[in-house]
Image (cartoon, rainbow, N blue to C red; front, top):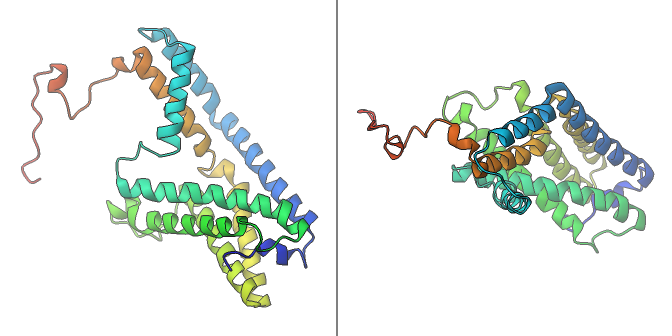
Length: 264
């Protein structure tokens, strides 16, 4: 199953052109939804205004070479390794979900636009990467949802309590889960169950990519920009205007000794 392209067998009942059209529509929905989110929440306006304000208030200029170095460091630490997560479990779950999602999406595009047309089944490595990507999303996603979420792990809320902000995570987990189950039943020759879970897979994927304006999907595009802005603010001295960390008052000469609570 892991080395079988599920879209190749699907091409026997659904034309490759229809599958490719669906993928293109989903891509357009992501682009359109992100643009709408930027305009509606004024994220871009706030970002550029904040950058300009930091530039004017900065104690020292930051050269183009420094900004390039900061950009590389941002990609290496904040994007590729998610170093901003102090909790190791949350970081691992995030990385599994992120890299799994990338493999799943890229694998889908490659197999739909290449394998489905050319008839390539298990000869390519992409079916394996597609399945592994979906599995990684499921492991990271379910681990986060049931054991790591703050409102579940720290506040004791039920993992089945749903709010609007959960739309992205739930639709992502549902998409990869239904995709894997569809692939299993299709490989086993269970036509009825394969059809059922393929429909559920498409429905979940449509919610995932079509629900960008109402979910945190666009957050993945803003997060690197915000991390870059923060690093530039540190480099030009703007961040020095912020209050000192609460856990290190003596370092800044405030003369306040912070002690642990008696019940700690």
